[in-house]
Length: 253
Image 1: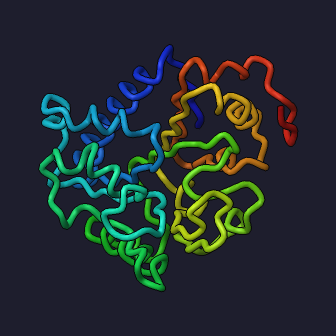
Image 2: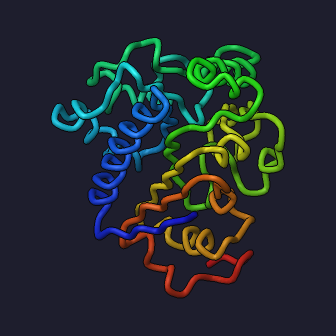
Image 3: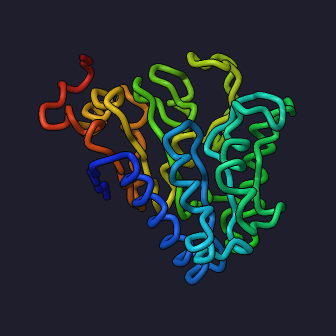
């Protein structure tokens, strides 16, 4: 199922995303004993993370039972400001009582970072869902952003990573957007999620979002459609400004 929710401003998108996080966290803990979430990089989700760090909101989340992962990571030194985990820590994770063991950072310094991260994901899920050791783990919530080119996580248009069917996490050496070396969730893992929230703000994303909404599979973001879950697109007015007259699939403006 896909829901498209349009809001007046980027701040409204952040509010809605934070509300979704809190509700799904409560549901995950209630139904399965834990809440598994993958955070997105980029600037769009940061306002949501800052809202979640506010005491009145963060107090509604059972952080002891929350496990945080990252949908992709740049291969930069630990603590580098370009890293997604560092941005999330500055905006959210350092301000809430989440145990350090529950924050699963990508070991980008290791040559087998993708394999290690996939193993970490399976291990964390197996605590409450033993079947995840063999099947595909199902995140309760995956936050994603989208670039003006329609990329999401570190999955870029035309890249071979879009065709991966078996691996859950990939190491990429040739990202068209710097830095070239990254680690990313693959589509099989993203599409196994119970809920994916795609946060899209800004006029520069409007043309790509219009193409996503007509299922232009040339864009990675359009390929995120969890068959047994829900995709919610949260967009501001600027980002949906082209959606009434979207370009034909496979074309651009």
